Length: 231
Length: 406
Image 1: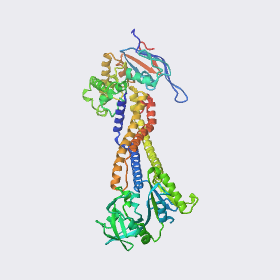
Image 2: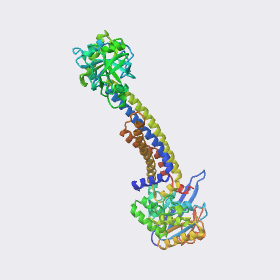
Image 3: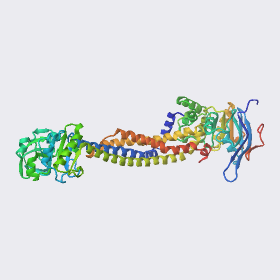
Image 4: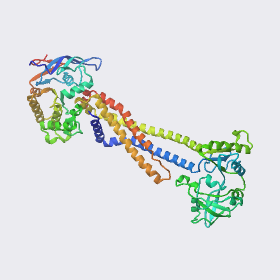
């Protein structure tokens, strides 16, 4: 792989000053992820993988070290610019789905486009397209509580993809789903990867993690027993 | 995110919590309605007092005995008896008082009038022939008494419109009315002073020649008041000093501070009224401010609850690209809309009350567009002001904390 990595962490530290003792959630993490890769990050709870995910998703900034996303250093950006980066470059899929309960499926999906400043007509068109691509063309007007868990997670995937982000960041996407729906969602991720998407999957279940091309283990704020080119 | 989107999303959030939003807006609604109704009643009362003052006549100076200034219409009845008919005659002297064009002495007392089986107690005024023009009145039927009637102490009487009605006289001219057991011939009926209810006492009276009144009613020659008419608005001041000097001289008083009479003008009555109005306005403004403040605190309270309740929503919106400013705007718009809804509905209810109150009671209510615009504007500002802190809190929420909360 000769092209520049899409994501590059360079000795990233994250330290929380909660009590008297500082907690080093990330301890010099370095990793590169290339465009089109499907990697999974596994680790027990408390290993720091959530903190890693937050920084990767530009929801938080590192205490020290550099994080380059598509060549841009995002490690010192202010909240305003981070919001723009999240909007344009990152698509989130959460364990809790995080759909707004009072908005119908398509209105949940169009949400990122509202903040991107896209006009209403285009938004609706794109949202309907996105829902169709996740197989929910007949559920566009349903509220989240009228949908099954698997359907809700598919709405969330449609929302994550609507801005054509550089990275799809899936944080325990199957954690709240039964095994059938889990399979469903994992198949969807696989086909998105096949279509060229860059996917970072965070999980604590090994059999979920194996769906990815590359598995990274996280422990005590660092990658351990790394795969091919972590480091 | 455009303003239009922000407003739409704010209104949706309000519509999503109908009962809570309605209760929040209620505080402001009551405040605004109260402001509009109280200002309306205040202005209505004020304009009816103004109408009553101007219905006394035009360019008037009112001389009252003693030093009292009370009794706008009845002219110091029962106070010191220092004014005489001779004073009135002297004031009518063109040489001493060139700027006084009309003089109407008034000797008045409450008397019971009897016509057939009907009786009615009203104000009987003894005056001269000039009363009609000085008091700016006209005759509806018959005629006013003339100089000859005054000279001969004629037992003739002119009735106010209301008085004639209460006495059951449908064609009063020529009929006989007993006053103090003496028969008086009705020679005329006055045209109503105006349609407003406040000037009704100007229609419930009876006028007789002053000479007749002195002998038969009062038994003394001290006047209740003297109405002076200045030749024009511009010589009101001159007429005031002429009358003051003349009366001081007649009464043998050198120090104006010891004057045993008081001269009031319509403008001085109006300025007293204005002072009263200002006090009233001050009190009303205070009440309105307090009720709007309470309403504003209600808005803040609910917005804080709303922010806490929607922490996850805020986190998600931030995760998908909402900047802190966008979140701030969204909550500000929501608070402003709550204030504005309360203001508009309150203004509507206030207006309905403004229309209903005069229909259900005798008080007059003026609809004040200024108060309406101001009240609605202020309610919007309250929404912004009291929504600012909750909105700031929402904007400052860290997205990870917000998403993590359960």
